[in-house]
Image 1 (cartoon, rainbow, N blue to C red):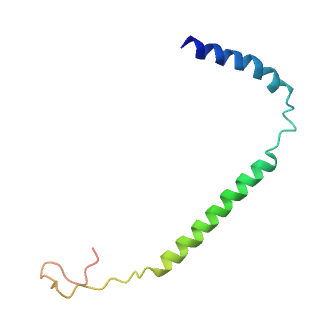
Image 2 (cartoon, rainbow, N blue to C red):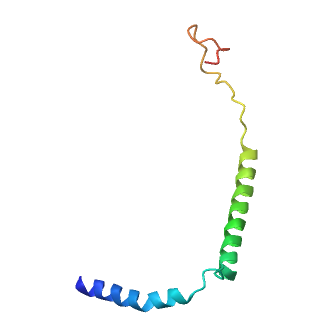
Image 3 (cartoon, helix red, strand yellow):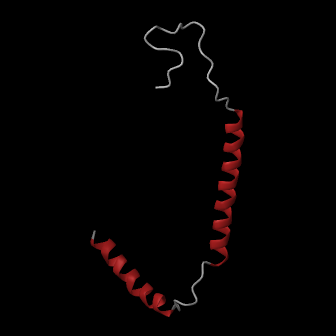
Length: 80
């Protein structure tokens, strides 16, 4: 693995001067950052809309099974 460490050190020596040239006060996400953020926002909006449609189709009222008779130990009105 000495080749890998040599290539890493070579890359660091070439990239460190480039990083020093960047003015930290002027760095912005730019157009690419906006496009990625907008795409993620649209994906979340679409997923929420789809989930809402699917949740509206669900019927939450539970119908008791007519085959099963309530036993004397468990009253039908118990909530607990």
